[in-house]
Length: 64
Image 1: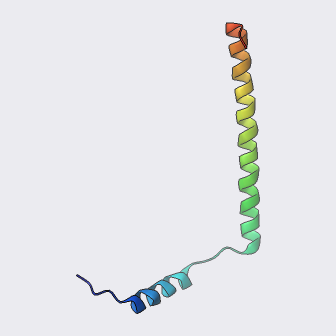
Image 2 (image 1 turned 60 degrees about the vertical axis):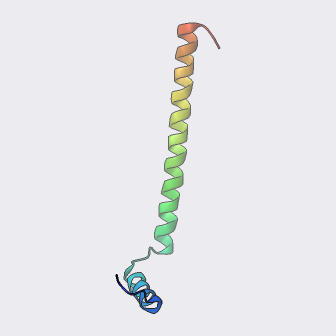
Image 3 (image 1 turned 90 degrees about the horizontal axis):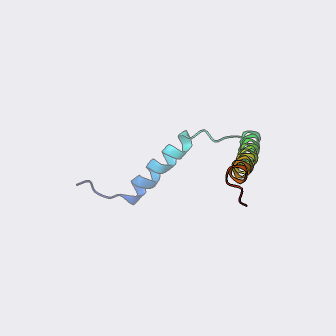
């Protein structure tokens, strides 16, 4: 079993974090905007789909 060395672990973590390519502020804002826009679009789509299904059920069964 390998010996646990907290100092070596911290050095390894720092080395790996230095390799990460972090997004710029602009990239983060653009991505966030796209996620919000797609979420809103999905919400509208499912609202319309739900309303159409409810309309069809009311027409088919005459309830509601």
